[in-house]
Amino acid sequence: MGDTLEFSDIYQEVKGSWNDGRLRFGRQSVVYKSSKTGKVDSIPAAELSQAQWRRVCLGQGIKLTTSTGHIYKYDGFRDTDFEKISEYFKAHYKVELSEKELCVKGWNWGTTKFSGPLLSFEVSDSPAFEIPLASVSQCATGKNEVTLEFHQNDEAEVSLMEVRFYVPPGDTVFRDRVLSKADVIQATGDAVCIFKELQCLTPRGRYDIRIYPSFLHLHGKTFDYKIPYTTVLRLFLLPHKDQRQMFFMISLDPPIKQGQTRYHFLILLFSKEEDLSLSLNMTEEEVERRYGGKLSKNMSGSLYEMVGRVMKALVNKKITVPGNFLGHSGTQCITCSYKASSGLLYPLERGFVYIHKPPVHLRFEEVSCVNFARGTTTTRSFDFEIETKQGTQFTFSSIEREEYGKLFDFVTAKKLSIKNRGFKEGIKGKDDMLEDSDEDQHDAYLERMKEEGKIREEANDSDDSDGESGEYDSKASASDSSAEGGDSDREKKKRPAKKAKVVKERKPRKKKPKDSGAPKRPMSAYFLWLNASRESIKAEHPGISITEISKRAGEMWRELGKEQKVEWDGKAEEAKKDYEVAMREYRESGGGSSAPSKKYSNMSLLNTYS
Image (cartoon, rainbow, N blue to C red):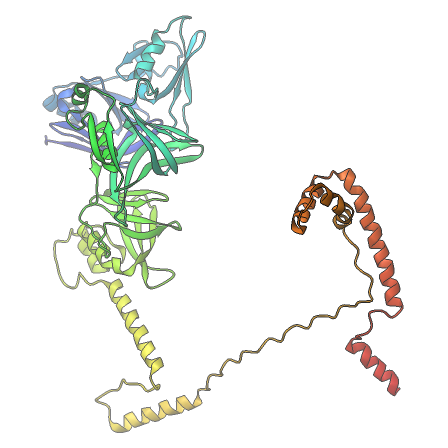
């Protein structure tokens, strides 16, 4: 039997959703790595105290219990895996893998047992179902029942909202034991420290960040967020391209929620010039006992360094910083666009990070291939496409052409598969680059861009010259060259010359002369009211200007009710009818015909000659 046992497509249930990954049994530890998030659970072999083999919905499953009280469950094994796993546990862990049957009677009465962070409901000494208390978000008590509410997972197709247990009236032991292990966030006691008015990009706004021993509290003017440290996956500290600001990014799973919006990343923006003197709300002995020299009671330095140092100590995770990549401009990031928003792409040692709208983190192990594509709008830029193993494609566009060589070298050094590298290089990538040759290093895309540049330069030179061609065949005879020259001359003669564009001058429009004898147009209801009210407005506001009269009149007209405006609407209708009658009489009397049209003038000439 080997030193390790490995199994792929092993599932772990996380708040109602199945996450697949790889499970490895080793001499020193049991390691499970999630394919979705890359999170690694490591169980020291010395801490394993109990192992159970059970039939579950996804075939066979293993339940591991540690001496520290933690419980881990993994499903997706086959029936034939039992013997080799059982022998491995006996040989290396000194733990017997026992078989345990689950109760499937469907009864709703039984006995509850608390085993570390797990609540088990048993019928006839066989577990019917188990509830991880870390999934409990609230515990409410009624007259004779206790209601457990659960954290929701957006990726689960069906979510369990709550479970109710009957308890005798006045019994609070059950509720207290649930709350002692439940993931109910309560701000009890004083915060370790507080950072005031930090600029946050996602979620957008300025927040006070209060650091508690077990969670992070974001307090803003509109929203509050409480983030347990157990939901923090990674920490990033990335410099802005202007070298004057710093990004501090926190990756979260599950994300924080606000309505239908989910924030998988918390991004803070700091100025490098901003300093802070910080004093923790703890004694020096407590700081040393809890954080073991990672923090001190009094600290001072740049604000982003203080936030990073505190978060690193409380979350107990390393901070990821940029590696050796340097772009064309000498910075550790590349300016690009993603989903019509401009941002920065950071090639890191183990993945890519895009900041900031929306933030993206792609690990190399989940990348299937990358592609360098020609820009859709101009040849001065190109697109960088990343395709994941799940089939999702991320396109970062509008990257400057000068960044191509640096990014191509980086991707090649990380041994990522490149789509458009060519057939030979694709074969070489599959063989783990066992052979090197100059032919394999040929970059088709770079050569094509150089050729396009030469073609544009030759086109510009040909436009500036007299139209003579400078290319010829030195081996051709004189007669051939003269014949070709004659043919080219005849072709030039046949081509019609380009006509010059003639820009016509626009003639100014002739204004129609105003008929001074025509009746005046009627006034609207507002102007009739204004003429009647102008003197009263002047009397109420002595010395008021004409423009102020218009403003004041407009306000007064808007404040009038419909009943008061009916009178002026009626007067306006009467004035309109009087105007129409006067206009008709004016036209019948020959008014408005001082400038007859061509049609009527021609008709008068025909009548004269007839």
